[in-house]
Image (cartoon, rainbow, N blue to C red; front, top):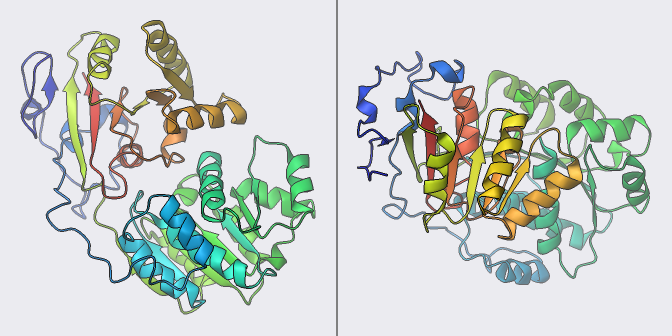
Length: 403
């Protein structure tokens, strides 16, 4: 396999990406709304050199020890290995601690989970009557927020219930009867629990809507409006989104009161992800993938396929070749999906194979490479996929197979 220069495709016939036709951006000049199907997406859209994030490092105004957080929370932050606050943490934690409503505009992987969990856990530690509702677009992301919550609240006697589809409603109802301070879940299941009178949304004076633009993309706008309609008028509301389209602004107006706005968004695609293409030119894609995966630098790899069947087949083929791989997609049970994510997170498998359902739900550190085995259907899908690497200031690589 040939080496390549940055900005050129990895080509198995010695050609480079310059042979493709010219890319014409949309009228706004951006790429984020390029919605043609994958077959017509110009491959030059997938070629971009990472910006050297070390050239202009963010210098936080605060340290975690400066924040008036609960002391146990601070110890848990140190145990988690956090150094300096990221930009979103530095700018959002104090306003949240002061009880302000907040709009956080941030790319994925900027550390916003801790930006809202740390002050909210502190708030509950000072007043155990406080209840917090956190709404997220996918089951996987909700489960990962639950894991983060457990780490940050360790030893404090503060509990949460995970409310997601694909898991036992009866078990969730039993856990909710114990009156946990935190409820973390997806819109559909939260709406269902409210409709069954199992979850009283009127008790939740602290609400987080996370990744709102993705929730709207996935068709949850009516569920979100339904949930908001049952919340108490006197509440603290936190709103996080990577973009603020028109529909999002409408929800913001009904959800927030005099909010503080914190924006740390740097662009459509992550600045610290090297993006390139691999031209297959009719060669066996599985063989090309094999040659990549045996390289030492491909330590933790997320591979995206177009179909559930294709992902299953690829998992079987890679396993037969001796690779440690697991797959997640819509036909897998929730338990199997969470187990696969856990194995990937804990480095028990090197490769996680997924359909686009996972691109909107995975928040795992240290993913070295994202490989688009199949070209994504839209440019927005591409952005969501490659956002799984190059997170929290670390560099990553995104490679896309094209014919």
